[in-house]
Structure formats: structure tokens, C-alpha cells
Length: 247
Length: 112
Image (cartoon, rainbow over all chains, first blue to last red; front, side, top):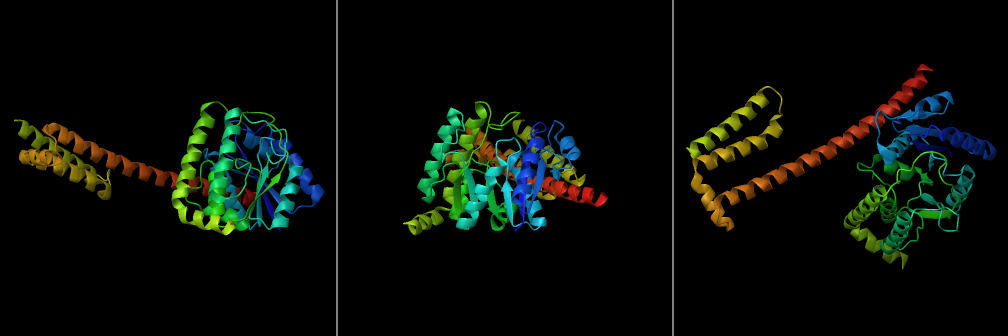
């Protein structure tokens, strides 16, 4: 099995080398058949120069496409190079490479299509802002109501995706701007097996999160509710069948 | 005099659009909608009674209000169509940017 670790980067010049070194160490120690691919989302700092100097395999987007656009580029690369799994990994130092093993184990045990690394199944000590904490709880509740499944951390970007899943994402005409609870709901309703596993995460080392500030999380919440509402309209019948099959 | 001004206005709008299409600054497909708008202005200018009829039909007692109402809806429809086209273009631009990144990566590997 071949794995591709995708790291979307926007202005991560200060973080990316450490992330890359830790990942390489993990791959070496576990002998995982994995390649690392950074996607420079048109950073305004010297991320590209750092990637080049450290001989990290990377793609450079000609202009900023945002987190989801960068991820989708990685999925397209994974299809072109015939990878079996994609591991989404953040370039800001939040994700811990050794925790990948937990995702790998959960995927193998459950033959899951998507495995999400969750900060909230066990108390990992990870601190969210008040608004985001509340948002995560509401989205967990919504997923449970719509799909009948418990996903505690739908906003986690730490995931393993099977080929069928990332191929689907790569070809999605309108891959969501925020691929979180909305996408989890959609994939469950489309019949994909989604599992969660508790993982530890740490706060980003340098720089600012894309959800920083007051307006960004607020806009994110409104956007996410709307997106979920549209999925309910689109997948209304599947929702009914899915809940029935669980019962 | 008012009627004549409206006829000239409608006529000028039609001629302006046709010149733009002729000079290839405006596609035939997109210009059709505006030709239609120009033709409506001309029809209302030549037959002002038509606006009276429409206003009465819509239950609007003040004629110009009916005109504003129709214009407002027409503009909303055009805006929606433009928004749809922009969304389509955004998706295509995104696809191009992604393909560009993938191809540049291949070229760099090839050069090395």
C-alpha cells in the first residue's frame, strides 16, 4: 500500500521544516511506504524557498486557492501517481506524526474509508476558542441527528482517506471551501464508512490560524450551517434510508 | 416629446449593442438578452398604452412604478445569471490553477 501525506501550506516557512523532519523520522521508524507532498498555496512569505532548499517535494499554486483548493490539488496528484491512501496533515505543527499510527490502525481494523483523528474523544488537552468549541458541539449533534453516527471532531484536518474517497473529492465540481462537518455528512450519506480515533494534537508553533479572529469563525459557522442545509436538501432520501439501516 | 426621447433611447441602445457584437466585444449569445431589453424599451416607447395595460394588470395604479418593478425583476434575473456564470468561471480557473501546479511539478522533475 502506498500512502501520500499531503501538507497544505500557506505562509508556513517557520513551521514546515520541523513538520517535514518529524514526518520523515516517523516514516523511517515505521517503514511506512509513504511520500510527503507539500502544497504551497501561493504563500507570501518564503515557504517555497524553504521547501526547495530542504528538498521537500512540493506543488506550488499560481495563486491562493485556500485550504480546500490546496487539498484538492494534492488529491489530484495522488490519483496521477496512483497512491492507495492519502493522509491529510497540517503544515502548522498541530498534528503529531507519531499519531498517524493510530489512524493507520483504526483504518486497518475497521476497513474504514475515512478515519478522522479526533481531539475530543478523550481529553487531549487541546484548547479551542469558545465559539469554535460551541460550533464543534453543535456540528457533532447535527451529524448525529442527520446520520445517526457520532463524530466528535468534524473540523479535524487530520485524516486518512481511501482511494475511493480522495478520487471522489478530486473530481467534485464544487469541493467545499470548508471540508468539515458538511463533507462528513455527505460522505456518510453516500455510503462511505467514517470512523474516528482519539489523537493528541498541539497548538500551532508559529503563525496565525485561518479561523483566527471574531469574524472568521462566525462566517465559518454560518457557511457550515448553510452547507449542511443544502446537503439535507440534496440527500434527503439517503438520509431517511441511512437512519433506517442503522436502526 | 417624451415618447420621441424614449424611442431614440431604445434605438441608441439597440445600435450600441449591435456595434459591440460587430466589433466582437460582446458575444452573440450574451448580447441576445440585451437586444431583447432594447427592443422592450422601443416597444414601450412606440406603444405607451402597453405600459398602462401592464400596470392595470399588475394592480399598480402609478404607471412608472410598474416600469420600475419590471426593470427591477429583469436586473435581478440578469444578476443571478451573471453570478452563475462567475461561479462556473471560478471553478474553471481553480481547475486550471491546480493543473498548472501539477504540470509545473512534472516539468521541474523532468528538468532535474
